[in-house]
Length: 303
Image (tube, rainbow, N blue to C red; front, side, top):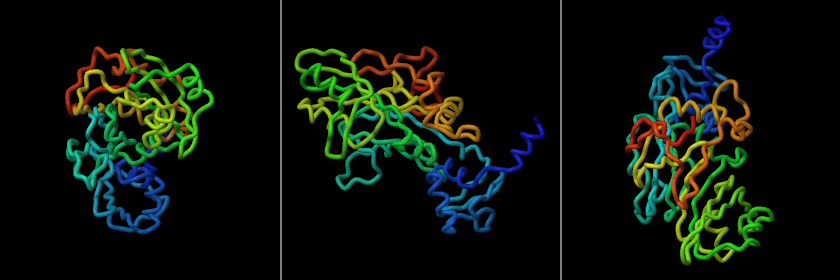
């Protein structure tokens, strides 16, 4: 057995995998870079199918990484986005952007996993791994997104049945909620918990608008395996520890033995804990966890 492990280690890592995990882009994009001659290893042009080893020096797009360095390990950052910030590095209107607050990186960059619009708050995930970002955002993986939604008015039983079973047809295609729970409310405002498996632009707001029920507040409380930490204040962030990062990578199939991330994402043993039923609240707290801005933490991931 030990001989087999040593043999696998001697084979090194696929070059496109190392580049993707370092945040350059998806594996497919990295393969295109290699074919186009945009990548070199130890000063020599890279070739498709090449494997690299610890200590090898990779250069791509004026950035250099050394294989095996700790800083090349994927990082995952959770951010409690407040309303009034955009998820973009460039904005003609010069509005506040979430990227202004993120910790600076050397030789890497933060990639936002999905977006939240200007008036939406809640869980936003960043990673330095282009491969991880691609797997979590690609529609074929059908990652669950859960929201706390406050609307003006109350849904009728017919409307709830429509969005759960029949679906609605919007300008860019049909939409159907996977789950919809009435969370109660007072006066003209009413709360619902919504879960769906897609991230089209403003999909939750547009669905309720189509029913004549404007959204007055929208908060994302879960994205796949990751919950919004209950004590993470708006505008604050927390970084997952190495154990939690490993769990997320395993969940999406980013290892040599997992080839079907979409299937893994539905297995019951790694499903996330349910969000509290209190309207608009975050998930139930882990008593071993405390959340402070920018720190190593088991924030939001179920063990």
